[in-house]
Image (tube, rainbow, N blue to C red; front, side, top):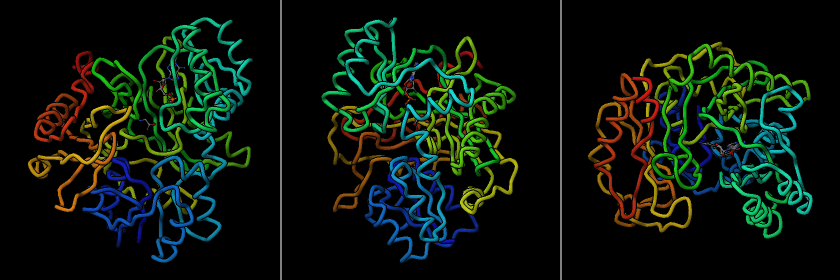
Length: 426
Ligand code: AMP
Ligand code: GLY
């Protein structure tokens, strides 16, 4: 099969790496890809927002399956476009991708299908929203309705702060159209868990559990990011409990979406908060988590290409996936300043020294090559180092030993990924 991967991050690198192991693969392309993906796939310089360019490329190369990494092309309708032209593609339709594209839609669907989630109100009028926060008990969570590259959620401790966030989102439009309408919800407390499941519109196959670390600094301090590291499986919940959470968060949504004529085909990701009152859904994403994919997929034994292709063809033949009985932990190396402003173009040193380490993988996120063919930084999140181990502690030790060898100016990473659970679950 000829396969095209859309996207340019470490999630797309791990997808490419896993798909490249499939005996079904004949040729792998990525658009636009990055310097790491270019080692295993042919990269073509088409941005993931250029749906017509991607379509023309897929037709020209007679691509058998396109796998979409990021949310924006899905929310923009790439799946519908490819299908109309008779091309096979993995990912939900535009109507189904609204679960990530519109937070108010996702909340309304959860409410309709009886899925536990924080109490919420939706506003498109700033005065009404301000009035609501002034009357509400703090803290409160304000969310831009549309896509905001992981930055559209703010937890406000005071009503003054909440009013200022509303002004930024709704009047100053710091997230453009995405913040014209907003969701305000109660703040939940607890540990977070990522539940990812493959869905063919009807059948649901959960992947292994994972936990992301969203805050930029050790000890969960600093602003939210796209994710600074993750590990899998998550020992906070037993396998049976994971099944219960899937029954609570994924299955009713998949059933409900099918009933409404917008079946969910693809990867559905539920962000869960494990509260004292039980699991609550924080959000849905319509694609693999990043960096969750970088710690889940190294543990997968099954042929990922085969499974994704089954879903793209309309029907999952499998009932379960096979997993390695190892833990995986991954750490993001980021550019100084991330998630705010950062410089690009610094040379990344030491990649060769970790290349052949056993069970250690370097997935590139924001990288490219300079004219001397050196790897250079090209994004906020630069690399993800993942490692397998017999348990989380072994994976942790391997990742951090490898990370010490890789350097670039201003580069930093969290030193405590997975540490809290390792201390509790020895
Ligand atoms: P979301 O994009 O909706 O997942 O929000 C991003 C992050 O904000 C989540 O991973 C949580 O850490 C936090 N968050 C979102 N909603 C809530 C909530 N209701 N209570 C507490 N934290 C939240
Ligand atoms: N790691 C969070 C996300 O992929 O949205």
